[in-house]
Amino acid sequence: MTVEAFAPGKLILMGEHAVVYGHPALAIAVNRGMRVRLHSRPGATGIDHSFADDPRLTEALHRVLPVAGVGVEIESTLPIGRGMGSSAALAVALGRASLKLEGKPVTSEAVNERAFAVERIFHGQPSGIDHTVSMRGGALLYNRTDIGPEFQRFELPDLPIVVIDSGSAGNTADMVRSVAERIEDVRPYLDQISELLQNTKAALQKGDLVAIGQAWHENHWLLRAIGVSTPTLDKIVRVAAESGATGAKLAGAGGGGVVIALAPNPGPLLVAAKQNGWDAFEVRQNESDENQR
Ligand code: MEV
Image 1 (cartoon, protein in one colour):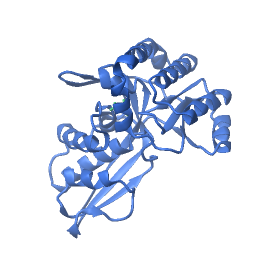
Image 2 (tube, rainbow, N blue to C red):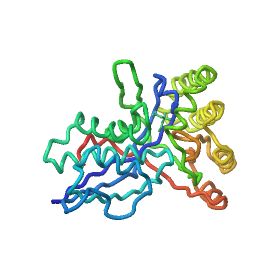
Image 3 (cartoon, helix red, strand yellow):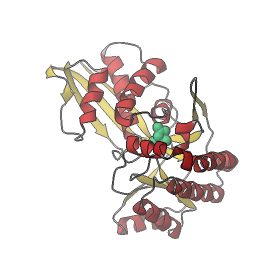
Image 4 (spheres, rainbow, N blue to C red):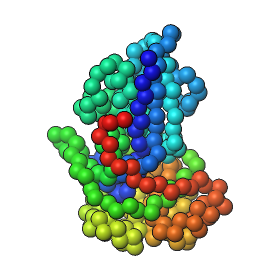
């Protein structure tokens, strides 16, 4: 028996790290993701081919699959560990596929429970935004409250987003921990990130690229102030501006990973990224899919 499931990756457009402290963040699911295929076969459960050398993967598989009898194939169109929600997409796809394998209904509740359990293996104490947006698709405003997550759909026009990969991975659990260790010093910056999102909502909904770009720049420098940027990420943001982007920011936990740039004319930025040795590509929002794959 073979079953398969897909889940998209994500980009946080504004509000990462602040979201861990109860502020809202805006994220979109993207048109890249993870596909997981499971099939019955003798022997210990494991990945059929070498995918990524990460011991957390085995733990993740064991969280949702029997210890023996399942072969796992994983295909990714996301860069791994770069802030594009590769672990969340894997968690959601694995949650969906494992339910199918057991012949159980693929409900939001069941997928959420499995996906969040897997996300915690990769990210320690995540806010839950990554796997929620991967599960729901589209654009979501998400915040974590004392009684659980709250999220609502956010109507966004199609934005001309270019992703530039710094070429190094960031570790989300470490970055979240490093912010937590300095929380009293950085809290004012997190409050400013939250205000910035609040003040940019109208521009986002109108697709005002100049105002959104300006806000992304400010968001980036606030993330830098809390210590999660790197010299390479700062350089990418500068190169993006010099190449005609209206704004750019790191996206995700930082410490490596990707920058997103708003580039109405992406050509010069794609060329500049290549000249600097950075992989760069355009992304689109993935529409809402509510568990159907
Ligand atoms: C990671 O994609 C986003 C962070 O805000 C962590 C989280 O929300 O769990 C840095």
